[in-house]
Structure formats: C-alpha cells, structure tokens
Image (cartoon, rainbow, N blue to C red; front, side, top):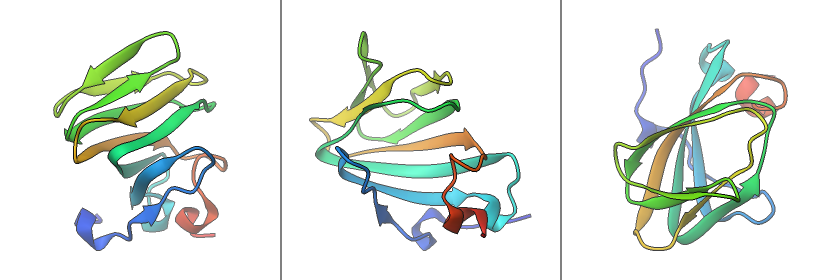
Length: 123
C-alpha cells in the first residue's frame, strides 16, 4: 500500500506547446508501484488552458475545484466540482479556465511507455 498527500508531491509546470498557466502533480505512477493506471492532479490557473490534443489512451477525469470548460472541438461543456468525464482514446480534447481562480481536476490514464514520462516510470 502507498499513501500520500497531494501537497507533498512536486508541482511542475506543464511545458507542452500551447499550454498556459497549468501545473501537474503525478500522484500515482509506476514510480510508487502502480502497474496499470496513473493518477495526475492538474491545476489550470485563471486564463490558463490546455489546447485541443489527442492521445491513443483514454482519460477519466474528476473535477475537484473551480469551474472550467472541456471541448472536443465540436462541443464545449462547462464543468464544476463533482463533474466527471470519460474521454475515449484518440478523441480530441482541450481545457480552459476563463473564470475561476483555479480549475483543478484529477486525471487517470493507463500506464504505457508513451503516456507516462520516464521519471514517473522509475526508469
């Protein structure tokens, strides 16, 4: 068993092209023994965004704090604390926070060589 607190996990700026005012904490990953799924904690600050992108893996998301918008390029949905989402593999998706001080959510993904960076795989 592994037990931690999210504030004890290093908060890193997301440096992918087009991402603005967004941080990530890798809460659960192979680094702590997880073999199948990784859990990440994202914070998108006011006026921040993660542009539309896609991956060959699914996402499960739970909104913890603040309000934001999720889009697949065709439909945009406002989400609030308690909202949860399933994003299928290869579906375009993006996030924006135009209104809240912070928009915070958990994101769970399958562990693959491409979905988890080497430092979180324990390589």
